[in-house]
Image (cartoon, rainbow, N blue to C red; front, side, top):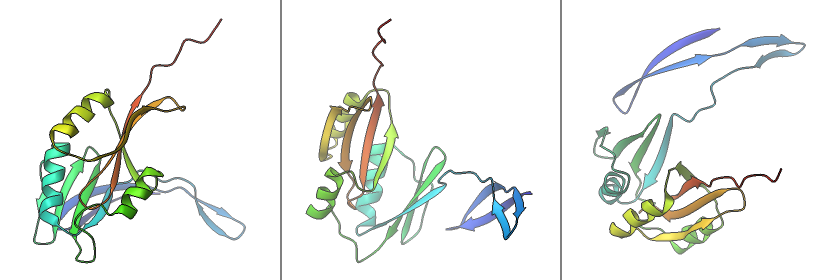
Length: 165
């Protein structure tokens, strides 16, 4: 079975398609196929204006939608909603930075040149948490936090060494 769905989200019309293959087993139905892609992420922030400016300046993203309590950006196929939340801090706390250094809850973006991104981040006075560093798993990474304390890892795939013949 497949169907299309149009829904309003923060006043924005979004088209979604879902393909579901239902197979009846002895005790009911199993969902055998569905698209495993994140379409939107909601981030609660304390200072909406500061966070909005950060996403516009650091990522170079145009604002897709905004209202009094929300700003929406689009990263290719993923929408990121910044939503005002009084209980959230206006800057990364020591706890958030500590967790970030352990790799908890990061968003990852793949780039061609991590060092070039680091240079751009330094120009924007973005506090870098770690890196750039080459990792054992074949990636070069750099981590920073946005004003709301959410962490971002910028990742570059390293060239593979030729295998001995």
